[in-house]
Length: 322
Length: 124
Image (cartoon, rainbow over all chains, first blue to last red; front, side):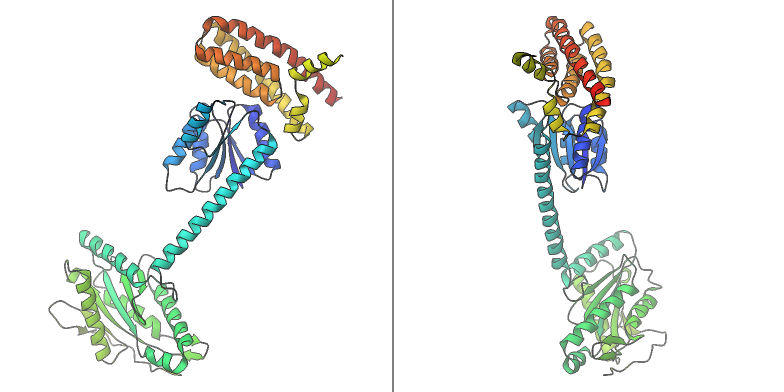
């Protein structure tokens, strides 16, 4: 584990450096508070620090205060090491944000024991952060496919629609539904159905850019959001994404399955400032049109017009094989 | 040397405490003594200039540095003399500074030969 030592006095610095290296730490030693703060701000910087109280540029309590201001960064466990020793100074040191306090000249064994306390606190912090991140992921992602869940994709879509309206760009919303998916579940079982959904999620993710969103909207319904998408190219892009499902069979435990997807497409620039619910209702209508037209095709939701077929020839519908 | 003499020597330089602090690492001990040999006279000279100029801020800062250096090395009595000078400078006791500096100089003059003798002994 990395540890920072900040002490302007060379003898104490060398003594600390050697003591901590012997205890297995990777030591970074600096001679003033300003350099200490810079080291602690580095992305992979040390998370344990031993700071002398009296230092040029910035003193130990000053480093503690500066580090604690950056709330977004990972926690740094800081120990003030100094020859000061009154109660008032101890309180001042701890109030500045230090976690512990050791008086010079230090006892090597006590120093190591106190640093082990610091390591335990940091380990606990890591576990808390990990647990929080796991909870955040679970709250925003579909457990089966790991795609964004309906709530999360709707939140992102809302933000994206506001942004594209503000910047006078267009957001393309694609609502896709796997054709005859119920047959997969009914004839091959839910485990195969799950395999299919996971593969479809992978293919959809593989078909979009890193800054587009893909979410699981319902059982076998997927919502794809193409950010800042040129309306002239949106139908072609949507068709490519849709065909990513049917262009080769999906490998399952019960053999390969050829599946298709029907989809509705909506371009936000054609609809002005409509509510999210209204836009989703319209793209759902377009999807319904695609289903009614025989499935395995794309329909575009256009204002004041009924959903229209694509001018380009569509790939031949592939029947479900099993 | 009688018992009282031994105690006095131990207070000048607490070698046992220092050896414990460096985990009996003779190489590290040599390193520390070399740093001391280089840094102590230089800091002491700056401190003498600060006291002569009645510069309280630098007197306080430099005596603090010496206090840390001396206590890390087990120079108990000299560290205490440096601590006294720091307290006086912080309190603004300008008139007492010279006397406290002399006391520190005296303790250092007792400590340094002991350190030199030890270095000569381990180098033999």
